[in-house]
Figure (cartoon, chains in turn purple, orange):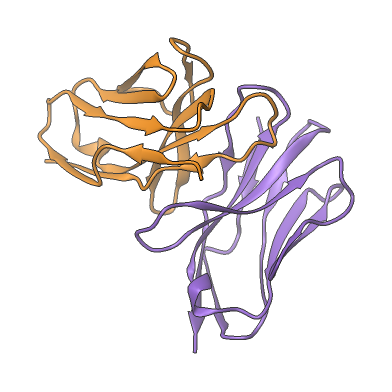
Length: 115
Length: 114
């Protein structure tokens, strides 16, 4: 069975600095998708970024980028120029490439941002 | 934008009650999901459905059932609520086919069982 591990329960960063959140996963599949979701306090969970395993190029969305290392089964999220609004719980998630499969989530990393 | 609406933001029920959590999505998504979120445990899948009247057990289905009579609505049922079911419940939906389709989440229902 696939598993997703986020080894950092909490992280902190100062405004304008860069922070990297770690995620590792375990799977025997060769084709799959990886996601980072953000859940602000008392607010809706939203998609931050998505990576297809068959793509070697790392995904980027504005200040958010990933470092996808397929062989190492690592999928870290880098947040550049951190803002107060980035404070949230971040979840790494895996989904196999079969229709009807659900996301498998890590336990989350709480990111705090200080001014 | 996709809208996933959960019927209640906060809910308080008593042990032994039958509890219904409702979820409606407005984007004609085939897939719908119910998760439970607990501190330190992340999100755990309870049930999901990939079509009307179809359902699949997730990781923690015990004590729960689901109903999907219409494509846009997916209900989670606690047959006889217990205190260990106090939690945050999240509903999500996504398109078929393609595992790359992102899931869209509702605001969550914080359920307390007394």
